[in-house]
Image (tube, rainbow, N blue to C red; front, side, top):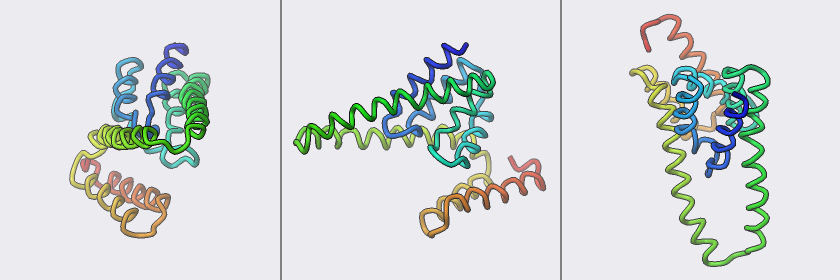
Length: 176
């Protein structure tokens, strides 16, 4: 099981062009099919991972723990972060040696919209599970507006609106 878990996260790692958010949709599908991680568990783990300091994909460690305990958490974390880090360092060195060439700019211009598309796919994967009714949609829109239109810290938004969502869920259990 640990080898299968490691191979899964290594593949997700090297395909994370544009960041970990780019593979959220694929991660959700693969973990559901191979390890039985359902959409509800995935979205809750994603939410908890957003609260942790550091890379926003620390959620892979939590997913590994849910799949197989502490050792699986370590395997998932190393398998997800090490390959992409090594690849990033290697490509960065090559990229710097190339310098400013027209084809380098062309490759960058081609990859930028692909990265945005992959990130939107990841956001859609999370949104289709998390946005279940008018209250959840209102909380999502409010958090978006607070972050984009004000100077409110994302941490304050997450903690404040998370507390509000938790309170609403407690007071109105049928809200979801």
